[in-house]
Image (tube, rainbow over all chains, first blue to last red; front, top):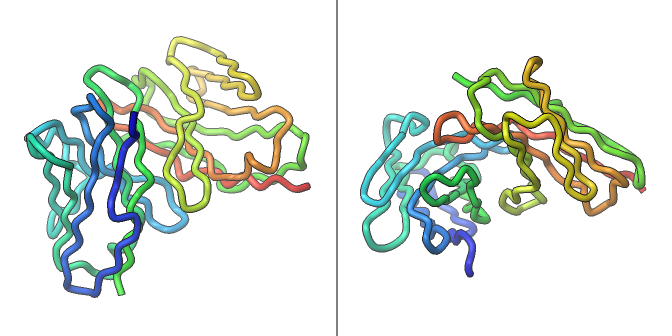
Amino acid sequence: NAGVMQNPRHLVRRRGQEARLRCSPMKGHSHVYWYRQLPEEGLKFMVYLQKENIIDESGMPKERFSAEFPKEGPSILRIQQVVRGDSAAYFCASSSPGDYEQYFGPGTRLTVT
Amino acid sequence: GEDVEQSLFLSVREGDSSVINCTYTDSSSTYLYWYKQEPGAGLQLLTYIFSNMDMKQDQRLTVLLNKKDKHLSLRIADTQTGDSAIYFCANNYGQNFVFGPGTRLSVLP
């Protein structure tokens, strides 16, 4: 039973490019959460999605960031026109309905040069 | 919004007990959690406690919850070098988790 999968594990982008981060939840999980961890800081909630729906995006920056969780396929966190301040580790977690436990993926470390 | 605070660093000697503390502001959480993060890795759930409990023990780990003071602690008995990591406390704020900044535990030989 595979855990939460994220790819790529490391991503390097130049300023102004787009970054796409993918997350495949655990089998049977329909809830996905994205968090950002800046260097030497804790995790900050970004967005909570269920299949085809954004439930809570209160932690998402208003511009350049978007997330989706389609009916088929992984959840995608998309960052357009990246800037150096976007460099961070982005973690995805998943859970099943009514479950109070979230299972985390290994993270994608984004570096913007 | 919810705020979770932790001390940032803790050093202990191998074999001693470690106590990592956490305070939070939202008293409506159903569960409170401790996660461990090793260098370059994701978060691993260590243990959690239901909000109507005072204590939970799981092998070398003891979690204490003081709801009145909104204080959570994690005690690691017989700390080993493999316990060196960052420890995050978290609570569920609605469906979302709010994490503390993490406590970096260093275990000295």
